[in-house]
Amino acid sequence: MVFFPTSSKSAPYLLKANHPLGGPKAKFFKSVLGFDPSNFEALARRIAFDAGKATVTQLTQHGQKYEQFISITGATGRVIEVPFIWIKNNDGVVRLVTAIPNTP
Image (cartoon, rainbow, N blue to C red; front, side, top):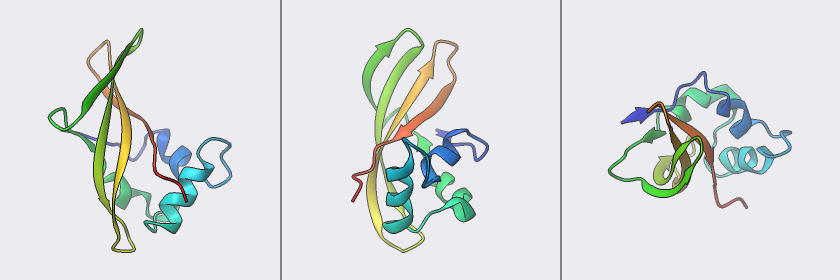
């Protein structure tokens, strides 16, 4: 398993409400699961790549992309399956690309 590092550049992207692309995702994580920049580490601990549960989606010039549904228990206590996109770079390093929550 590969855990999502709290220092990742995706952290502000996923939880920054005024981000042009991540804004709707930030609103989802805040309103549905209760996560915002102040408790990002709690969300990050729940996000881990598991090759046994991930589905290969695409081969790109940068590496192999995967989709993995991860059951996230929010700070609110609510449990939601959230799809995450990962890439295994050509050098073998796995990193989180984005989340695709079903935004309200």
